[in-house]
Image (cartoon, rainbow over all chains, first blue to last red; front, side, top):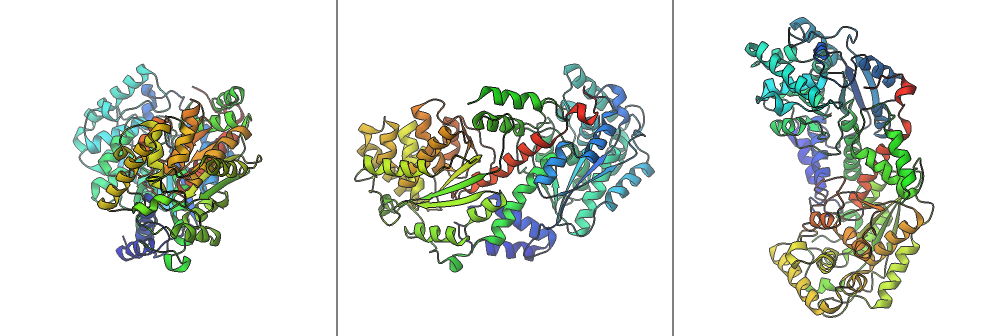
Length: 318
Length: 318
């Protein structure tokens, strides 16, 4: 991160016509943009939301309220402009890309076998990495994949420990029996793959999914390209979390767009020390919460770049 | 409120391509718009922020970190487009009106005399009431007035009880001695005007301010005209609060845009049973937090009006 750019923003903040610090997180958001864009005056000219989609073998364990074919149907819905993220991206002034990852070839059922081989995992990471163009000023990563809150809970448990219950929620809305099936599937997977769970990347291959691997690769690419990242919900956060386990500052260029209603998200954000911008009780994924937060980031920057200083406006200081 | 319109929105929500309820508060926001606009499909074509400014005699007690002339200087800054609310209104797609209320004639110092006579109070209420045009789809009310967090704390204490400390914060940033002067001024006022504090409107006249009275009148006008209101911070909320004391549903058409960092705001919103949309640690007033929340409301409506149904998109339901 660029300390000098962040300091330049902080210095300008204190000259603007408001009590010092009175814009709260709006001020820290702009310093964060500056730090990771490496610009004294951050820009938001080009903002993108990239939604990755994948299919999950663990759906065979009855872990979702929706049938697995909904993943492909929703990818078509994204293309047709009918999903929530289409509306939220437009409202946020963000372009939307949708990248399906072999959605007609589900990962392995990780209660029985690794979800992905090392080669399959790296292929998905690479696709994610290559999806991020260097000219972006801010990027959000979303996901679609029936079954992937089970995947995300398994990754969270692998990375941060605790029993499956700690990380398992109702996803798209499973009933009590479905919730128990999710917990059982995750516990089984944690036992089956116990030997490799200490390695964040091997864990992400064994109990993850292609769209999560792509988010990991894309989040890493953003760091290398100087692009701040707004994280979305539980699945997107779990997907990026291995970067924080590989390096303590691995997600320092990421801000949590929101905390979702999915049970494990609040704890995961706490473990990552990422305080969320918004809390709207959302639990949709797709990048929906991150898109919503883009509006906040835009407003924060608008204040920073548009406000007059005390001297310019002839306002007395205290 | 129009129950039928709210029900129509709720029914449509459940047909859209997302798990039921998964947009969380975005769904309830749209139902709230429908209920108070009285439209099955709410609109946000015309959104306005109205900032009222007033001067406060209680500044003689040393209750603010800034000199009293800053009120007029900031009104000029609003006109010049240099304040935070100018940028935040533009980012929210909202028009901004600024209405100064006799800012060269401060209210009475309410530690000594009533802030306003009944006639002065009603004049300010009337100006606020007349400021709201009937063609608005959503309105935010902001304020500017050096000293007015002391005013707001006095109103909150009058309406909801408790000692002055419960409601008194640092406003624009007073030091510990300034905070004690604020508390002392409020305690003195509560004793001086004790006899009339049981009457919400008389209390608002005795310990309020012109810009707060205008917000009260404007919030009432919005209700009569079918215009939902986004409340801003501690001062704006306290200004509108007498309506909730006059009638239990007096603020049902209002949503709290945010909870500010000013000490009394969270408790005031709790007393009013108004859960805030945002929590950004802001403490600026001007309508800044409400403006920020307009973006959330716009995104909520964009989902509702733009999303495809399960049937339209050919997506399987659970």
